[in-house]
Image (cartoon, rainbow, N blue to C red):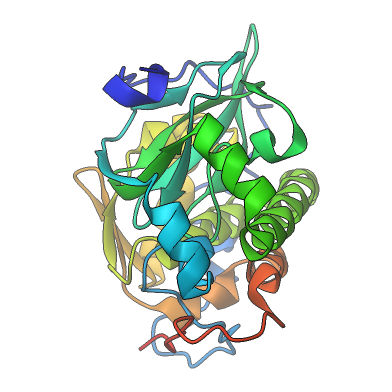
Length: 292
């Protein structure tokens, strides 16, 4: 059984490093003044959240889903569980329902997140490109449920099932778009905007739950800053009444306000995450629900 089967756990993925000026405003400074306050009625992106499990599987016609389902097994994944070691074999492909996985580039002096995958895609889709080794380390960021299939079964399904192959190809492209947009976002936008973007993307992926587990340390890996910077960013969002952060958990209090506090990268990533499922005929089980 591969590295994703048992579940080595790593509570800390290393020490991220960021320039001293990576957070431009201290807590309680002008950064708070630029944020929308709860109840301000700020314009919001208005993109529907997805609450019905993995979108790849939900988009398949019944005949193809029946074939794929024969190779699927339900798993519950825990925070910090390593799915693939850096430069490790991709033995399983995971289809998240409520869990979120993080891909980390691990270097001598830093650990930086290069992408996240939730219910809009699959973990291990590099197999679709003919690659059987994961360059980044991949671990569970948000615990939850997923379904998985062995690498050989996935490759067989891609060859045999045209709709499955098409959706996987589109999701692979969408993930590449996310990675490139995140690189631009990390270069151009401030820590508070990036934090809001990341929290929104996580909120979209946890099955409609407004509260999810997330430590400052984990978020520092995701944003590529020191934990002090994360504390300041979360503090600014909390003082504006957009979130609550306590005891390793985040609660979304004002979804629309959080969207207004984010940069445009959130809407771009969300749009491309949904495009793999646009224009596919005869999808009767693909439903979206407007956020409440």
